[in-house]
Image (cartoon, rainbow, N blue to C red):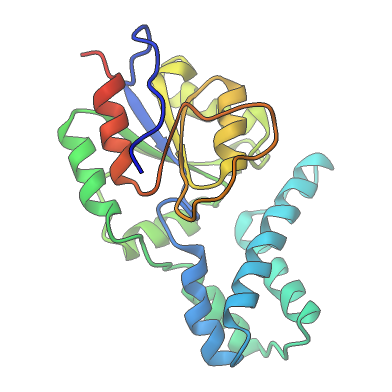
Length: 237
């Protein structure tokens, strides 16, 4: 799929903020270990775990009951296993959480990130993940030294899609949000970043439909490779 839509020429992409989970790191790769621990349930567990994790982050932000994303992720795992009637032993829980700390990166990501570096763009991660989680998964993927900033919503104690979470990017880069490309594989995230004021790109890996929110990300592609083409089309040097 070619990157969709171009920005008006008045826009200048000077930096890129990437979502981490689902965008740089494959949250569903955990299904392999899940299948080993719970035969026949790996994919279902990975999907429900992810849905519950996001739901809990939203509920906690709405109710001002923040706790670090690592703990939210663990709570979501426990609930998902209870709902699926899976016997989650302490050893299995530790194994799954340990694997979450070193999720697989999508294969094209590291070369794309290096190419964007060569283009002179400043790069960051802007994630719900707490700092320790992000450091661990970045190191496991061999992405040390790629990012100018690894930004966690832990600094504002609110998860995306709170405006305070998105504001971290402009504050750290010292740029208007429109000059930062926000990249996410989560359509809700890309849409809400668009509402906030970012230039946005949706990495639609599964060919999913657009969320019915009355807002459309500025660009769309199937892999991170399409981000390079979008930046090349819309960057003013």
